[in-house]
Amino acid sequence: MLCGAPVAPLPVTGETVTLAPFVVEAEQCGFENWTKSVSKHFIVYTDLGGPEAAELLAKMELLRAATCQLMGGEPLQAGRMLFVFPSRDSDWSKLEHIGREQWRPGASAVGTPPARLCVVREFAVLRSLLFSDDESIHFFSILGMELAHQHGLPRQLWFDQGLGNLLKRAELTEDTLSIGRKQSGDATLRVHGLMPWLQFFKVRASSPDYYTKEGARIYIPQCALLLRHAFTHPDVQHRRHLEEWLVYLASGHEPTEESFRRIFGQDLAQWSEMMKGFLKRRTQNIVTLQVAKDSVDGSSRQLPLPVREMRELFLLVQVLNQQRAESVAVLDHLLAKKSISEPLEELLISACILRKNFSAARRLLQARIDQGTDNPLVFEEAGRQCAREYGPPSLALRLGEGEKVIRDHAAKALALEPRSSVAQSLLSFCDAFGAATGEATLGALRTRLHSQVSLPSLREHKACLAVALWRHGDLAEARRLCEELLSDPVAKDPTTAL
Picture 1 (cartoon, rainbow, N blue to C red):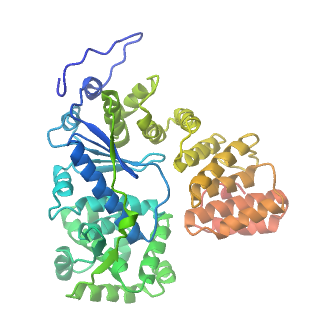
Picture 2: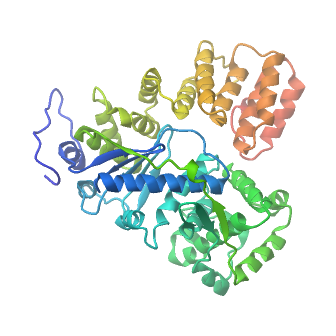
């Protein structure tokens, strides 16, 4: 046994199933000294001890409030975010080293709806949180990036890297957040120069400009420079333009000088000179934001933690993080159980969706709804799974009885989170392929279309409006919308079906 006290062998009935070694070990591990504590927005699993968990949660709630201040408001409503903090010599860490390959060090985050999970494995990060040393803000970058995306901002490598570095250099007190400190990479950029910006925005995780040491020494500091400029500039339009550019690129568009000029209001050469001037500045432009103390609820409580729950948590993390053949077998192993620990049910749903076991996901989503969940992501995902059952959209598609089910899920999601773009898209899907296509339906579709700000959502609602117009007999307007969509290089079905 690698960890905990010996446990009786698992009973075997029926056909023999071969499981990976780490599964067998995990299912017999005692997971000694682990605790589970909850605060308003987080759940923490750790073997550091109860008092340390309470301190972690209080710091995390403060970090969350500071991030909300930075991003300009509350993120979209969702369930509590799960964090796992193993100590250096924990049984969790020993189990991670069983198998053909070791886990990557550091933090890993999983954002697949309806659950959100982060596993922090670097002991230095834990120590910094507990003892508030010079690295204490490191965790802020992990949490801050996750919360930024909950504000509706899509993921792009340059944005995530830049925001992470911005937050690593931030200073946080009980009531203030200060950003804008320079980084050591600025000196490298002044010596070697900036990467051409169109080349910079095309870099992916698989690009040599990112994964090689030579490329990263320019690319990563340049990400930090870009975000520091946007978030500390006195004119908020600089940040707004960058966020619009982020959405544009995340929608599948290639960066071009023309599109850059349209969004930023200046050509790339002018903007490049401005960024060079910002890099050459010797003074720091520190921006300090006030964090209202009454917005931070740092209270927490410790809950019972059965060993079964810890075993299931470990296996779910494996399924969610490891792109290995064993992950599918582990998921099947968990689904074969009569039930799973209630706090982990949404995590199991996320694993099913990630591994494309949609039938199990639908069953588990309905079970959560029957239990009375207040997580809007559950209703969003239930609606999406119901819509997925109809296959690719076409002009012949009619939802039938499924229309009411999808509308009910969307309505409940909006009742819990009025800003839910997923629920709005589900309603437009029902308007396009449901029973009614009258003036009221067209009016609702146009209202939703005009309220969208992201390009993917605009395309979805415009496509649904085109379908509804075609069904209503307004062929000319439907054709015009389709031509607009088909001229978009990243447009997808159902517009091509028209």
